[in-house]
Length: 466
Image 1 (cartoon, rainbow, N blue to C red):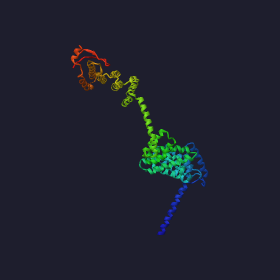
Image 2: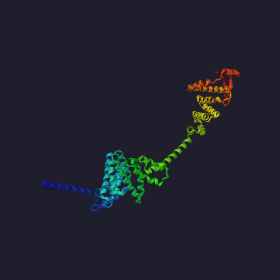
Image 3: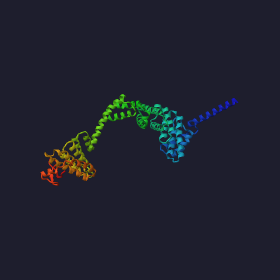
Image 4: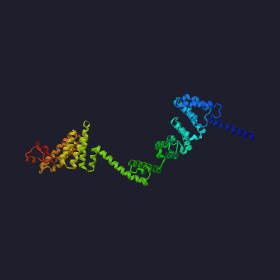
């Protein structure tokens, strides 16, 4: 019984091995020893003419005949596989039935596998093209595409085609984002592809430029996960040569410094420290430039800044520029804003520069832009009250200045109810400084009589007594 089992097992292995070899042999069959050699060669020439003219429907029947009989042609050329893929890719792209498209896609991939099997010297090129078609045309699942890409790199090494760079980068970024690939694998693929690219850029005279372009596009895709798969040391090694080559390029300094900081490179690192010093200068200069541009375009805001810095004369000049800028808008001029500017100038002239005449002039202009605004009159009243003690030599003259102030407080209150409380308080406060009736009697001035206030005020007031 034992011998019988051994015999059966041996027979199975023989049959299986024969079947496998036959399958391999069949897909690599040539027309060299075929009794139909002449006919197959004719079919080959005929279908190839159609393929060259992109008449794939006419080519198909003739290609099928020669492919089924001699898939490997004469053993010296792989056209039956590559041309078959062209024909089936044409069918795939023009087919609307999804089941048929899936069938054609499988045939295309099978033809790649057969070419690789029968023409192993073409494996690197074929694997690259297979990955290219799977990515750009067949939209194959990334898990399947990844296996082909890995084989392409394994088979080709530094000779791996540049056409796999972009598909490979896209697959890695996608799978890493979905946590289907860890950072070590992603980093390894990134480094390997860049090594292949750099080798060919340096040594491949024919296609070096294409590897360079493909590398740039690939790394542009990898940039989406670069920060996640590499550490500070990697970015220093990558970016420092660019900085050393152009150490005064401010845009480059800013870019590299920000990248290293984002990668948590310590400020104590010599390169980071060197970049930071230049970056700080850059930021300072940039801020100054931006502030100068802002101030140029926004004189009103600049005037306020100058005021806060205690530069009152300069603030006045900027407010004048702001007014000119606003007036230039003509039909779109903002009258309320103009009023605000004039009021700000009046406040500075009065409270900081003690220029009462010009302060009153600006206040009146402010009021002219906003008829129901009482603040300019409150400001004029404050000026009168503040200078009343120096208005004239006699008490009567000073008291007339107070009456002028009271008139302005009362007027501000009458046109602007929001100031009622503040104006009333000041009216109450300064009413104590009205003249006595006896002073009026001595001067032969009665209540209600108008008199002119002296000093700079020059207003006319009606006399009221305590």
